[in-house]
Image 1 (cartoon, one colour):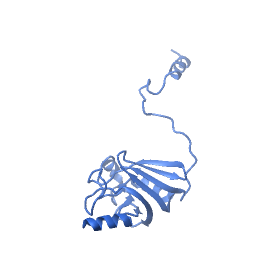
Image 2 (image 1 turned 90 degrees about the horizontal axis):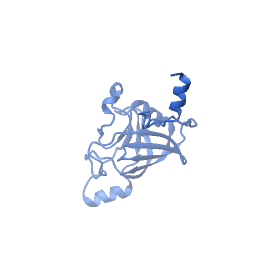
Image 3 (image 1 turned 45 degrees about the horizontal axis):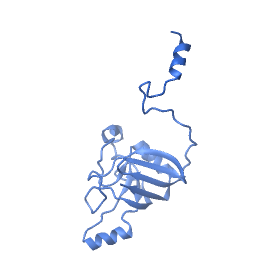
Image 4 (image 1 turned 60 degrees about the horizontal axis):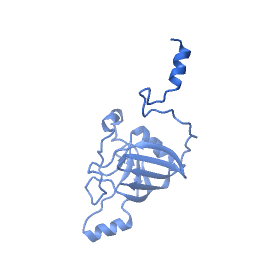
Length: 175
């Protein structure tokens, strides 16, 4: 059969017909500008973090979360990732993990609720990379919830998130 006939025959088939379900051509997006991300949405059940500049989706990442399960953080040491609305309140370039963006957890309301319950709400929640020196084995961390309540991506990804996200960006963490 000639190349022209094969090409014409394949042109009428969709990706699923070719055994390529889930594959799609990348759509060209304008390059993200340093410091343009002003909103981060983390969907815990989907293990997904999306970065936005205004209403425009800039990037999406698969994330690892706290090893304490998908329930919302309740107290210090439970290894759960909190839920709610926060801000990026700082950066730590010398973190034990490859770069870290501080999430403003707990909020004053969460502190008050924890105090009323007689518990410590915990804190020090970050978006960060892998433990220092572990970047070469990133595949071992992918798809695993291993943090103490933080949100983790690969070292290459946190470098991009670090560069794109402005200080004070809003962070929404959903169930």
